[in-house]
Length: 347
Image (cartoon, rainbow, N blue to C red; front, side, top):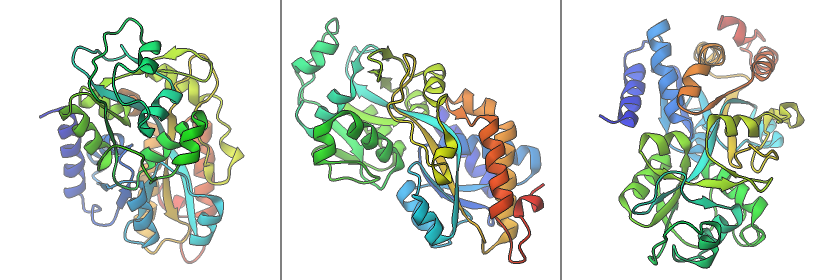
């Protein structure tokens, strides 16, 4: 059993063996799924309470919380303040991760290739079609590149991971911004679609001469070949906890209502250019206050005790000051029908 299967199995055990499993339900982003599954397993062992999280993509997760079929939704694209207000939702960042380009090229080792955002945009526009194209060779003069055609792999579902990817490309590549833009789903100029980070990882691992984009944990767990990146300061950086944390260090979390801060293309010589938060969505006045209170208890536990587990999977825990701010927001905004804060019930 590989690591990904072990994590999924752990998550399923946590979901199926708890008396709370039918009540505490969440759905959405595949980006944080390895982390949420690991947290669920540890939380079950510590408290006896489980969590059922469906890794179905941010777009589907948003739809499920809006339809009130789950206790919480999860998305890698923050909802705008006016949408939160309209639906009566609260939003907060639970953790941060990073997106990496991955390739399947014979003889190429992880980190041996380097890409710029401009080049990635041109590949996904279909302008750069072969691996030995001069644009790739210019950035990688010491790498022997094949003349084979590039197979572009991208998401087929509504995806917060796609939002992170296309938001970054739109900031770097003007032609990409004009022709495709950013969003959880775009009109792709080229490529083969796959569902979820799991699907993209599986497709790239099975397809020679392919390129895709996944959350870093998926790249590691599936032993995919990641590339390095040229960041905003013009430096070549590798995907590491240090470069992810460097990108997140200067974020002003209170600058946007709902903590909707985007971290693409942050300045700094050590910053990884595709670092991103992942958000949780809940109703301010949930239909099932008991389940909502239990969910808040889980997320508070994850803030307080889940940091090392996040780092072990190369995610970035939220800084304590952000977690403390979020907890205050819960107390002020998430209440039962009588106006009692549900975070008080969660203690």
